[in-house]
Amino acid sequence: MKSKIVALSKNEEFKSLLKKKKISNKFVTIFFGHLIKKDNKKLNISFVTKKKIGNAIKRNKIKRRLRNIMNDAVKSISLKYNYSYLVIAKPTMLNNDFKIIKDTLFQEFEKIK
Image (cartoon, rainbow, N blue to C red; front, side, top):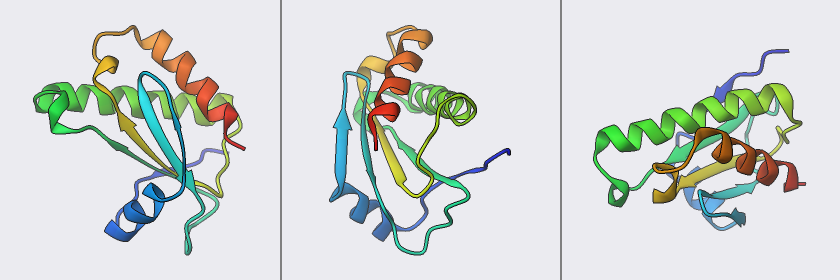
């Protein structure tokens, strides 16, 4: 089953997720929790990169990496579709190898129960 990744759209969704549980590592901070009126058949996830990280090219590169990692994660590990996720990137993502980032994020998403 090919699941579709859907981004969070409303400001209230972001604010309510920021009040829920979080996991942090040296690459990202992941906020996760249940949202009301959410489709459980689709993965509800958004990626945030702050302006402090760099210019638009660097921020978009980080978001592309995160999207690619999540597409692989949907296929290979079991994610909780009843949760919504907010992934906030840290500046260390720019200088590290893609494989290291991918392995670290896979471990973080497997911790979420």
